[in-house]
Image (cartoon, rainbow, N blue to C red; front, side, top):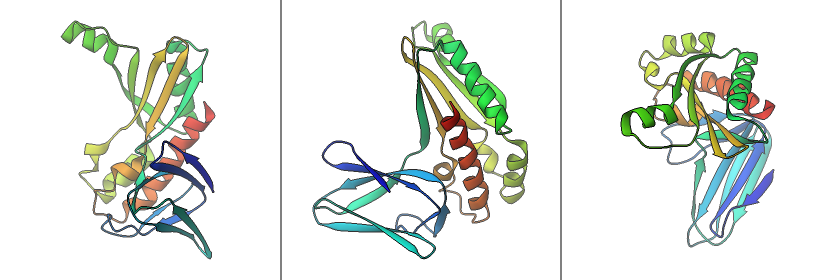
Length: 199
């Protein structure tokens, strides 16, 4: 288990195995797998959270405070020394390898210029869809289309520095009271993580 400090009040933990979390803020027990990022935001008394994986139990004890476990709603990476259009194409190719097609491409720079007459950085939202998983999800929950497709953003933070971020479907589906979506969200999340990791 790897820990990263971010400021005085938060610690990020990466847990690269099947993790079962029992957290009061969720309505039910939710299962997750692969590498997940959590922020432990601290308060005023000593606290401990435990993460279980079958017979293995991992504990994260952090500074004086009670805390909340917050899962990041996205996966991301940074590409350096690449042009923006090149980066967008690279992301599309990585999505194809995981069987995602791009249904929509939204160019926010062009849209803001046209509608608001303001300048904005290069920022494209790709609406990615894996048809077999989308079909399974819709069979299980007919309103899940409100959360589809899976958005992947490519933005130029500065010249030659491109950030790519993909939605974490396990977070977006937390508000859906349907346990049968858990496995689907987990598999889609793993595929999107593979996309980000491959860039």
